[in-house]
Each structure stands twice: as C-alpha cells, then as structure tokens.
Image (cartoon, rainbow, N blue to C red; front, side):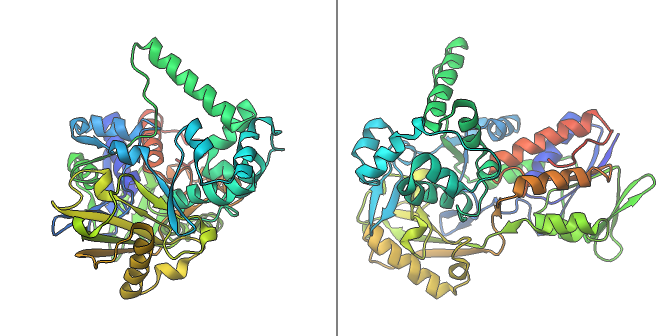
Length: 466
C-alpha cells in the first residue's frame, strides 16, 4: 500500500493522482498545490456571461490520452467538438490582411499564403535528402525540407501557435518529434504523412469503422474547468491547497516533504508535477547539480487578452478558429482565437469573444505592458485584421510570467541526463510539461504511464522522468 505525495495540482498532478488511484485503490495519495485552486494554467473564468480559458483553449484527438481520461471520468457525453468552421478555416495575418491557410492539395495550389516559388520548394520536399542526424533547430529543419519561404511563413506561425517560441532556438526532435520521425522512417514529410493516413484508413476498415481524420479539437460547454473540477472531486483525498513545498528529504524508510513552517508529509514516493523552475527550488538541497539542470529549462512570458464585442460591431462572419501572425511581420499580437466561433456558450447571446496572445519568446516586453497599452495594441490588431472599430464591452487580462516551457537545442540531452540523475534517488519522480511535451495530451499520457509503473513495481526505474 504505497504512500505517494504528488507536488503540483495542475493537469499533470491531477491526472497522475486519479490514474494511480484507479491502478492501485489501496494507495494513499496526497496532492499538494501551492495555489488556492487546482488546474494550473488549465482553468476557465466566467464573467458577465463570457467564458474565458486562461490557458489551453481545448485539446486535440491526435492522441487518445485526454479523451480516454474524460470518458473514464464519465464526461464523454459532455464533450463538444470544435465547430466545422473552426476545424476547416484557419488564417494568417500577412501584409496587413487575413489569408486562409490551405487544407488540401487544391487549396495549396491556389493559396496566396506562399508565392509560386515557395510552393515549388514545398512540392520538391520528397526529393530532398535526409538530414545527417543530431540536434537541429525547427527553423533549420524547415528550411532544409520545405524551403525558406515556408519556414518564414508557415512553420514560424505553427511554432508561434504551440510554443510562442523561436524556431531558431527550439529543437525539432524535442518540440516536434513526429516530424523528425517521419523524415527518418520515410525520407520525406509529405510521403510520411500520406503513408500514415493510409495506415489509419486500413486500421479503421479492419475495425469496421469509418475513417476519421485526426486533429479535431475538443472541450466542454462549461470549458476545460469541468475536467479539472471533476478530477479534483473524484479523488478520495481532496488536494491540499495553498501549500508551498520548500524541499524534499531522503530518509532511510522513504521521503519527507517539507512545506512552510512545521508542515511535513511522509512518503514512499514523491512525484514532482509542478513547473520545472519550482522543481529546481525544491531539489536544491537534495541535489544541487540536478536542480541546476532542471532550472535550465526556459519558459516564456505570455499575456492573454480576452475581449468581448457586440455582434453587430464585428463586420466579418468570424467563420474559423482565428489567425496567427508570423514573427517576421513584427506585430505586437501573436495571434487571436475566435473563441465564440469555436465552441458554444463562450459568449452571451448577441456577443462574440476573442482571445489575443501577446508576448512569447521574442517579444516578452509586450506581455509586460500595462493593461491600457495591451488593450490598445489588441484593438489596433483587430481593427486591421477584422475591421473592428468599436470599443469592447468586456475584457479580461491574464498574465503568465512563466507560461510555456521552451525545448531549446540540447533539450533531449538535458532530459536524458536529468532522468538518469534523478534515478539515483529511488522513489523520486519528475514530470509535467517541462520534459516530454507541452500539450495537455502529453501531460495526461505521461501521467497514465507513471501511474501504471508506480502501481506495478516498487523498484526504481533507470529514468525517473515521466
């Protein structure tokens, strides 16, 4: 009957606690969270009939982990898919106007997102040689495989939408391992995507099911907060909130987790699911070198600016997911999501809700602007992109000083070293989105893997990362 203390009540810690409770009902699980609510960046705020996501807007079905979690929690019938328009229409803001991203071969040939020369460079991708291996930036990988123009426009925007990071710094193998794998297996991204789609069609046919293209986004009418609150409520022992863990101490019979003052928790195993910079502080007294390597995982700064408008004040139909802006455009807004067009009940009747992202790795100063300046910057962007000239009837600004981990060059080597070093401390596990994927799916997937491991074997693994 293991006694496990989990530090960090975000989606990683909550999912780990729930999955471990499922795998070993006899386990004693204590979940500690420093804030006054669980969820971390995954949370939904409700103001005046508007529902604002503080962090992720939803999750994709490219991996089954989160969908499976929702169904196991009994939330399957409450899931809602993004609207067809949001799934079909996504835009870039280029040269001061919106341009629709292509969704198929014909759309690619007719799009004005790329010049004819840029399109030809992409079409030549299957004939390019494989890379020489080793770590490579996302930017270098994209230029080598797709050409300079696609790297500057499409890949830059793609990276902005997921990491709000710098493609020249991010490691392709760490940040987008699927792309590196396709090149290794098939010698080409285009060829690899095509063969993967054929495999999925064959698998669906063998199961007697219709083929469904992956990549649809999901959430709930109540927002992602429903997932967090359901996980919290399904734990036998409620999370302990408002607890700041200071350090962990190895003892002869297990672990001692130290909070502020006289707070102590004994444990057979300790799982750190908080952000990497918090893990580093907790580990400093136990293993200074390990703490230093963990602290080297960088985070960016992002500010979310949610604005609501009267529907009649928005000239366009908002028939899509929203738009991103490649960094070469030099704008103050990374992108804008059309939240009320994507999921139902995000705005009251007769209103629309938009959510702008500001800051990121290359423009951290924008995220630090005061509220008035941020609202002015977002208004200027929406005026040019969507023709909105009216003042918003609602706004909410959410600041994340350390928002998204950045998997810079050398990240995989850093993670391997951290995993091997942490394994020297049996019963200590490090996880969360700082290591093997920043998406919600990655967090729930890794949590399920560790829960199964803790439930089956008390022996320490070769790597203590999850």
